[in-house]
Length: 563
Image (cartoon, rainbow, N blue to C red; front, top):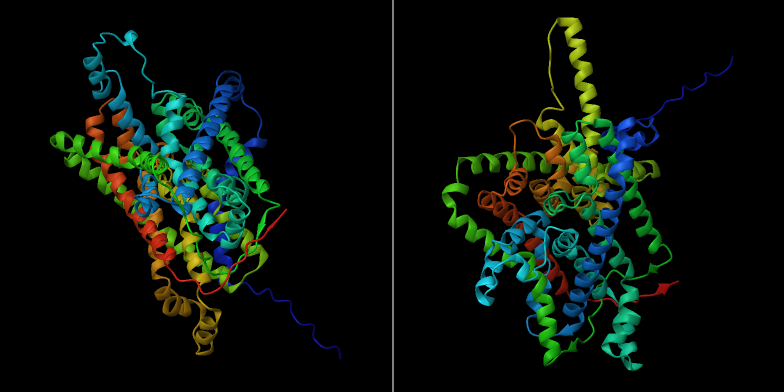
């Protein structure tokens, strides 16, 4: 008698299934755009490729080049000054230099254009001072240009480079820097030959983040009359009603992002750092005196003043001066809509990110790691691309469901998904899930695995362990995830413009519409609300960095660069 052959059972863990489902859902919008690269070329796309595509490519490349140079100069120079030099106000600038990250570039564009235009207060004062009568009597820079967009985006995005570069400078070995001094290197030569090469990976990462945000920008380039891919997608979709053409433009923009990611990774592929976990003792700073101290103070003050302080003062003055126009029932409705979207998305993103991070902790397998990477890929993709990729499958789902309901019950369901805030929340989740996952994943990594083992030995399942043990310990990380997603949703413009339902505007959308109609007084209160909300996480981040910088160091650190 032959023994029975055991049945082959496939064990499917619920956490693995949930992670796969989340990753598949988050992947669909980007996959839809990527698949359009292999679809047949339409006549409308051929027309776009002959007429406007060269301008989109040229302007995008010029914009990226200019912003890249701008954020490098501002971010690296200020990070070096506050890390390695001693001058008046250095302690304040350490955290003040992060604050312009809260000011979206499109708000800067509206404010500075209104202030510096021909009939604005600056040029009016100059004409009265020098007796000029006409515009031809003098020259004044035009902010509504490619150069103006580069300056404004650089002021808003340089904190990406500043933050990562400053951390890299702080983590560099004291012995390496002191050795360069003992060999006779001046502060300038030590910066160029030692500190800058060691910080190259952090600088490359910060610059890549800034350039991704540059390609995602819509409000600034639209107001400055610069034709880029994001403006082209919006005009093609809504102005021309050409959905296939907009999809093809989004696919080309996706190729730009992919190329940028590959270049950033290859630029530091052969550069490796080996460090211990402790923070090194900072070397004694170079003491600046005289005009050098004054120059360092002005260099650090300029981006803070132009990127945050002056815009806040202008917005407060405009809001108070036009309070009856700006602070009305319409403003309350806009604030309610923005808070609703931001709150829903932030809470959902926190929940999904917690599931992904904890599921990966339970099953650290290569396939799950790949799925999580796919699920969090959206942050590198511009909002306009995600918006188009979200609408296509949701519109097909709506049409299919409506057709089935008509045939089966004689009822029309209309737009259940693509015409509601559901589509907006999905697009936001695709784009910003990476922010929540990064915060929660970092928090989970600090919890010792022995706690999981102890909980399981007491009969607690994975879900019970997560709720009873990890959730209380992750309170700070969960709050960080919610706050980061909340703020980014509040100021997100491209995706909201494309997907929002009819008669459902947010603060960001209304600021764009008011500014496009030259109704800047009415745009003041919504713009000020966005900026003030954005300040909260940036101030909190600055505080955390300052506290981390004061933590004692008990272990030595060695830094080694392998080429």
